[in-house]
Image 1 (cartoon, rainbow, N blue to C red):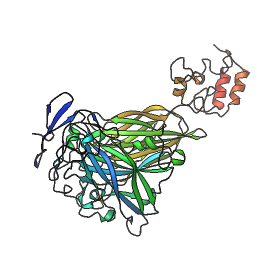
Image 2: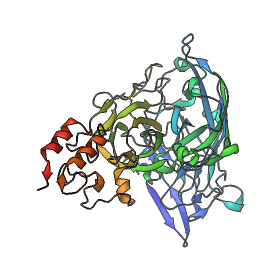
Image 3: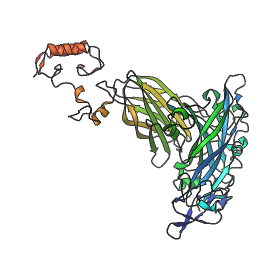
Image 4: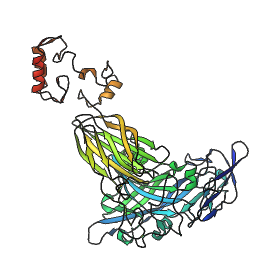
Length: 548
């Protein structure tokens, strides 16, 4: 029987009996007895339990933390790092038991974690950990799927029962020698090779190059940390990856996040989880959910940011990304564009990010932000503590019609700085044009392909009212009688040079052109080169007289 083959017996209406059988290269993964549950029953915190379709593991709670002691790496360099680890409690909200057989079997979850920061109208991911591998499951009820029963009624051990929860403490998740590299895990299929306990084996024996207190944990540069405040928020995230969950097509909801109150400094910080866990939500969601401060209580209760636009990107047959974007009016006709792209589980990964630009767009302050890999996490690395994925910032290329950030292709390097699963990168710039809805293009890395997604992009603004032409037309501010996408007030007159529409090119039109001399376009820009100058004057004089 192939790993993840299912046998489902259906009983009374609304009630299912679950049994899941699986097998890996190392042999049978037993699951114990079957369990009955009420389909789509309500748990706590709006969680829906016993959802049809198979096992469905989610992070029900981030609870407790380990704050490692900051270190200078290497000593004498002046580069200080801190590290964090969170306790995690998983819940199976599906209608079949979830396999949980420890190494050497590979039918168990792998657990990733990371830290995010929201400040100055943007969200950034600060660091990620190596992966904790599950070894046994308990039978709690933290997601409330068993209601008044008080505790899970399902099996435990080699299975996380239907509606049940399993806690892993922060100290257990922070056991560095038990953590395995991310590169071995395909988060879309949930597959990773079999191997010896506790982390699959064949990993660098030492992690001291990343700091003996910090190696394999969520390592963050101390300069990226500061005390939480009304305008600075931090968030911890956790994600479970499992084969049977992915076979059931439930891999897109395996991530949850929770606010992290940060204190201390300047090098050693303390992060304390606070508030409730945002179940089944990736960390990038915190930008829209909690992106704005909220008056005097902003430190504990930030508001949603309605100007953050979220777009879900599901690749055909493989992988899930979330794109969040925001355009901010800087004044003086300038706009800041900020994009955050999180690869939730795509093994193909991201290789290039392209934003369309109108002709003549003036772009400045171009930026990029990524995370640092550490402790020897590089494709195929089994021995070197210092061999990691390449951390080179994505070079940017700007043309008259687009701006694109791109790393090397997989064919060029299998250790390029691709946007791999569980990570989030930022792309940013300023433009002299207001936002409209348009399509960005994401190019994938391992298997080359492209996908388009709607979000905010710079739009042409021919009438210089700081509103994109497409929006002027859609809201009725401007007319577009011929449907060419250009407001009629910006369209060149049928008789070039007849700026007042009198049917004659005369001194009135000459004075109108002179009055806007040097303007960046507009009706007097007769040759369309985005400036009113001598060339336009000569065209007007050449058309002098009665219009034909």
